[in-house]
Amino acid sequence: MTSRPTPLRIGLTGGIGSGKSTVGQMLAERGAAIIDADVIARSVTAPQGLAMPAIAHTFGSTFVDATGALDRVRMRTHVFNHPDAKRTLENIIHPLVAQETERLTLVAIQASHHTLAFDIPLLVEAGIRWRAQVDRVLVVDCMPETQIQRVMARNAFEREVVEQIIASQASRAQRLAAADWVIYNEQLSLENLRECVSTLPLPTP
Image 1 (cartoon, rainbow, N blue to C red):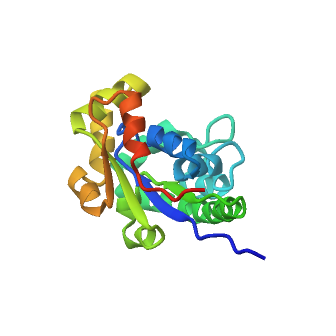
Image 2: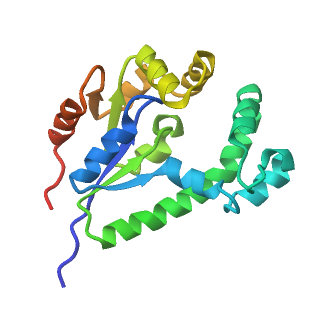
């Protein structure tokens, strides 16, 4: 019986508004399995999600909306004003995200994907824990003002809110210092961005 080749593991990261998710879609076009930490985190905080009982118990029922999901606007405001609350929330959500990530990784390997791209917005913030689990870190980079303009247009957030989000993430310099590969997504068309992704040395199927 022929053993499956070991897939390349990429940690895909970038600040909010960098275009990281778009790059992830383009990696998928090249045959990579995308394992999105944000999507998983949203699933465990969705109505009746696995994290919701602990969130309600820890933070109170006011942080649960009428559908039974996390009230994201209320929680976002709360954690910006209370750093300890952010750590408490992460201690609830992260173990559940890790479990589902492991499950999806096994599914992708069994499906013989040659590349696994872990879409992790806070890869750099997680430190050595995530860095040790990937072969390459791919950072999607752009100027901070570009991030602000993209997120204001996409999410209809006020500038101050976007600036707070950026300030809560790793700095641009910290992300670039952690990178093995960088895609500079500044004033690129989608086709230009796709060309950048096409140059990445991924394994062939």
